[in-house]
Image (tube, rainbow, N blue to C red; front, side):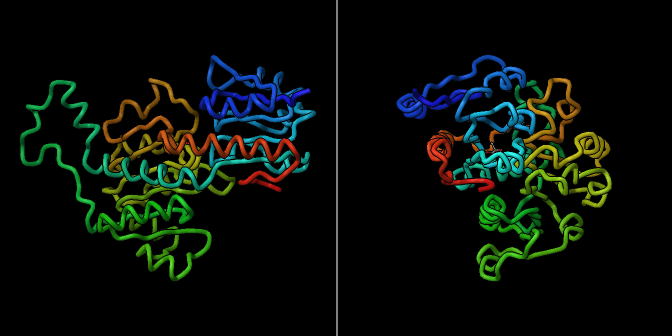
Length: 322
Ligand code: DGY
């Protein structure tokens, strides 16, 4: 009897072909994310699960998976999975770091460029037939990047890659991290360690690259936003729950900070009536950090490899827990 694998969303054809050779697979179609009740009923008798960041794999869900040996998530983030409980239950967890580092850093930098030069806003101006209204010397001006300070919160893989992009644009780079980076890394990136307080106070562009944990939950609230420069911009491609959205919307409306570029939100997908949607000084992306053709293929390849290893009780190539 073939082992059973459930996918909460479909993957590339090559990945499905590979999975079908070895397993009896079932793919959820329809409403995304899969309703929790449906996932709970499916997880009951499967050996392996392929999931995505929108799927909540909590204790109760894990308890339903009596035969479950592996959870392979198609993402670098795994805050949607109760990894400690999965480990207790001897369930392997695979994830997909490294392959999406460049794509995500590129997206962070493109949000930064967009909010600085107001490209998306310009697109809206043209589509609304308002081009003629912006000929004045002070109309529709952006800001230069050269000489500006980028503050990177979290100098891990993605944060470091973003620093390389910023260096090429002659920006001054400061960072805050749990640990200081090595001297040689700081030197090659041209990045200087500063306290969190200094990062907040001195950044012209502040880009968030930390996971969502108890410590980072809604870290960017009004208290912090008020300590940022009035002229600064906030970029977030990590996890939406690191920012208090209500406070950010107020801060943008009252010009407490100048603007924001976001790829992630507290609850995704956001609705059309979300307060962000009405604000002109924010660029919104629908969680597309890893979304390039090449990167997504590599992620699918690793997701399948992680599943293959974990389902046989082996450690996935990229493994959380054990
Ligand atoms: C991830 O992989 O965790 C990203 O957020 C998905 O784009």
